[in-house]
Length: 151
Image (cartoon, rainbow, N blue to C red; front, side):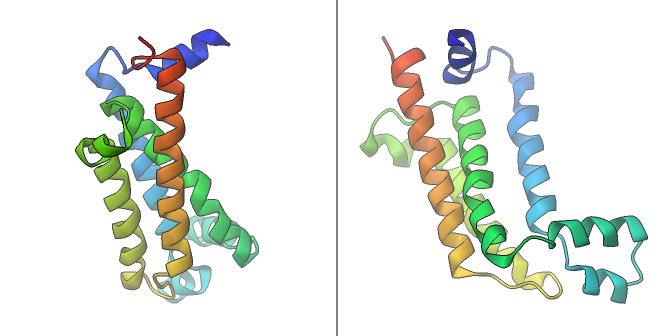
């Protein structure tokens, strides 16, 4: 178990690991930027995309809103792992992971204004930013206990 904590609390040894935060960012964009099934049917989209959309939107609205927190938690965690943790509260503004995850959370929500039958939601934006904040903070705490900040 300690090995897992050590892995996730220390920066990766190879630059190729950027595939993980980049891939997750792409995955998150697909999940949060997919049009609703009715919009896809109106565009005569492939049945596979319509079915995928139906599955995405089959959950209650409140659960879809809550899902933003863990999704953006993971985003912030992966970027913080790759780029390095927040060392202190005052250093948060110097942390690249903070900017990437925060700006992506805002842009991702605002981009929904351009997706048919979707709209930016203040609740979703709050959950995005709460997930980013919690992801960065918990990664920083783990680094203090097991990783680069433990020394």
